[in-house]
Amino acid sequence: MESGKKEEAGPSRGVVNAEEKKDKQREMKTEKPLTISEVLLADEEEEEEYDDEDVKEGDGVVAGFSPGPLVSLKEQIEKDKDDDSLRRWKEKLLGCVEGDLNGQMEPEVKFHSIGIISDDFGEITTPLPIDKNQNGHVLFTLKEGSRFQLKLTFNVMHNIVSGLTYSNTVWKAGLQVDQSKGMLGTFAPQREPYVHTLEEETTPSGVLARGLYSAKLKFEDDDRRCHMELNYSFEIKKSR
Image 1 (tube, rainbow, N blue to C red):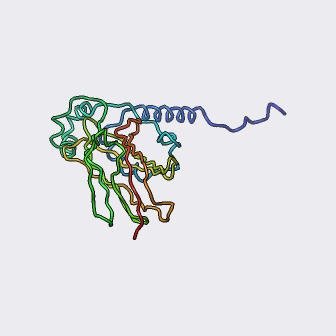
Image 2 (tube, rainbow, N blue to C red; image 1 turned 180 degrees about the horizontal axis):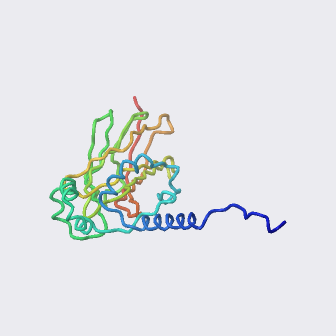
Image 3 (cartoon, rainbow, N blue to C red; image 1 turned 90 degrees about the vertical axis):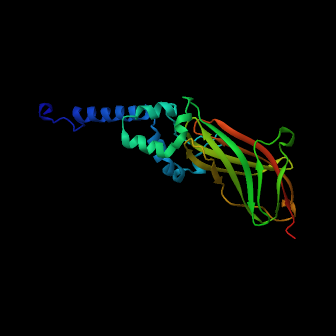
């Protein structure tokens, strides 16, 4: 009989309410601005999880990632001024830079030099920015089949720069022949410049590989701010 049927089992209202509460908490957590501690402590995980396959082609944005609202570093420091242990940790992290903070919201990355490290000649360093009249000039010459690394020196000012990435695109005779991307990481302002060496690469070999190449090196952060775009050239010569 119909009156004797039991209702089908389903989630209780209490469980539904609990799930809705969890969803709201997740939304609140996403919208809440990140503190300086959360940003810097997440840096190592961010570098390990970075994968070129997770980057949408052409825009450098990691799929599914949405950076939180930007808050000035000065404001973040003042929020925790009553926490002695956190204040001491920040003083150790930022040093005397804290006195230079002016409340500016957007971080600034100032590049001082670009170097090339190779077994062929050791290290060659070029000051930045490059004179406009020399923009695109030959920065270095390498032998075919040789290994090399690009080395960068830069300062971070005003605020934490989060998820600083680079892309290096190379052309030969007007045709794109290579493109590499990578994550530098998250950096806090400091007086001393950062020195970062990009991943090692190997120049191609063979008759067709020799000649002049043009390249564009670009640096962006999580908010797609472009901190530097450098056009340069290099040459590959016969090994013997």
